[in-house]
Length: 316
Image (cartoon, rainbow, N blue to C red; front, side, top):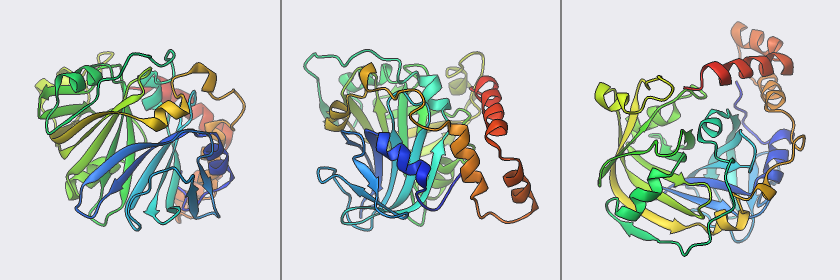
């Protein structure tokens, strides 16, 4: 019930503060791609309740492509997810919701220093090379892009202590599944369409790694045991058989200065996430007695108390 079908005032406020987003889209050949877009606050802005307009420099997928965006705000532990279809100037919005902050908390994504100034190494291959392996060993945060059988795209954030992306060999990586929104979008999607992309980010580095391939789920006890954190073993892991891997400089990450503390959101700029969730739940058109009861009890104070317990007790 936190999901809404159009952009409201809360979404507009978040978009005005967002300096970058991970964009996932499906091309005509059925390949899922991911790229970081943006570079300045407000690069994507509402053009009516059901449309997002992008700055002219933002690369756009083919018109009609299934597209999902995960909007990032430096220093903010939550994120905004917007899904829809690409058009000539931006995105026709089909769904929007604020994602919980567990991935950000686990990754400590915004606890970084200034960007490194060394000349970057870039590479591209059909397998994971040494430079990409080193980058992944420092990665605490990824976004998994997937699509369902009807061509709806999804961009799901995953975060853990650095190095949580397990490189099993030069053609296979695995990622643990941790508690989050409990929507299981990625799992549902890959059962229908196994093509995925994984975009990895590393604080202090203006480069990203994109891994494209086919995904599957595993409950192999031996593998899951290697992914334990705070004595908590994940129940399932995502395994990706790699078709393509690139390590490249992201102009959007660089332009947005994502890793500079000076760009972090000032406290009080946005409403509390609990306020946003409470308002979105109250505006839900979900029918039934259970939905009505949830709407009635969805006060900011109740949601804030519940989230505090959930973040503390169910992080892993």
